[in-house]
Length: 341
Image (cartoon, rainbow, N blue to C red; front, side, top):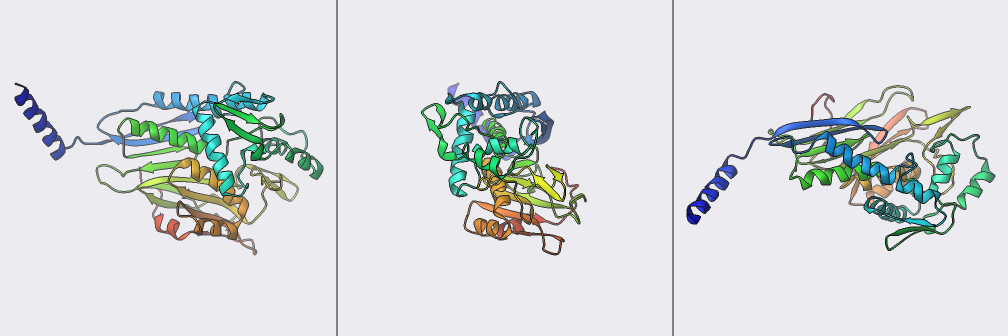
């Protein structure tokens, strides 16, 4: 009987290999982390639900959201010395410090006091800071004042606070991807607030997954054109100054703060889109590319083998143009954006 049972199991495995179960497209979407999320995956049945994903996103908020007074990061910011970290805050801080080093301090999660002072924090700013106030706040920043000791995140001065909004959404995308893979799902697209990571291909046709990214518009107020990128694996995230800003006289005050100067970024770049193997890396690097500016950002990307870059910028005559690294150009497919995932 055991031999017969083993034979039947072997026959069943052979039949499954010859005729694998058909995969269906499952699309989930909802609202989380102050934005929307969309998840598409291919499996024999609905292996993951929106409720499961929203539970994961809620747990991430409880750790990483500066807009939640009860979150772990809020407790750290209000603490004079530090707090014990969970797996999420630890992972984000570790990768953030690595990217800070990789970008020579351009990306820095300790600029939260400056983000707040420029009116992009949890509370509205009463007045914009002058040079003297910026210099004062710069004394409360710097990743060298942040240390992970065992299971604790410790700061050197009480005024040091952190804001991981420039990298946490990418990390959240990665967490959802790992959850799908733990369920045996190998063909998927995960998007939160425009940050995207994909793996595998469309089923059953076996075509690459496609992502729409914003291309250059004719002017600041026009809706950008859309380019289509084909991917089989990796993440694409975008940082830009064309949506989140406010006007002061003739100046556009960007939400992107240059950690080197304490002032909002002002250069020719309109947006930077980064491809990397994971979303946390792409999300951290896209802000840094915005601060570097056109020439330095392209030079930075050329030196690395783990990223590709697409830039939209304003030329000296006021017109808008775009450029990209060689690897990014290879991903672009010029077709209408109506192709479903």
